[in-house]
Picture (cartoon, helix red, strand yellow):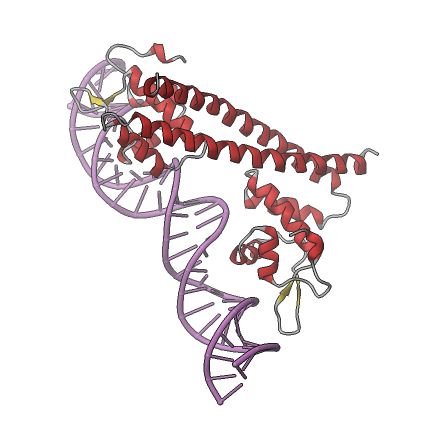
Length: 128
Length: 128
DNA sequence: ATTCACCCTGGAGTGCGCTCCAGGTCAAAT
DNA sequence: ATTTGACCTGGAGCGCACTCCAGGGTGAAT
């Protein structure tokens, strides 16, 4: 299941889906939405072939999505990859996103504490 | 802004919205979806009046929603409040939800670590 | 008396992120 | 030769959680 399992000819879309944890449909959807760094190579018959780098990039997409970054914002981020010297902006986006994630985590943890209190309350009620 | 600021006649929907951090539309929507413990009292002219308890319950709804519990599941939880002796089931739902939240937190924290590594990488690239 | 701010209802509309479908191509297996 | 299975495209459809709207009521203030 590591990224290094990618053969030289590249992975099919279902292979890339399995490695990335995304669905085949989602991979095509992300591509349509402009989230791929480069549109993937195609085989002679027009099928997508994913390289190791492609799969790594899918990992980045998963990381951003699963921490709540909207597709639209990821697109802006990807577009900067096509701009030379945009590293500072890319970093800034990631830093802003990190702040956002930290706030989210904080809020969820606060609510989690409340959930725990509620559970304790029930525990006393049921067992006690 | 504390819950104890609720007057004896009860709060208007906009007052309850402000205290709970939800929108007026969302309050009506939640009620329609069966998430209120009891449908709120009405004034002589048919307007909703929210008690201190109502507002506290809204806090519970916010807690569940903001930790990712779907409306549908919250409804099941609320329905148990109308069943006598359902405390064990309610507790079980909360415990299952807590597990879910913990897994979520865990995953997000893992991705956060990856974001931090990416930021560090850029930092070296940009400053270093 | 009318203006204003708020409230009501039922239902339509929205944005997001997929997910599914029809209709078709292609390559390998039987 | 045909069956099978995986792939392709463009576009429709879906579930969720709101959010907004039309059309109308109420009550206090000017």
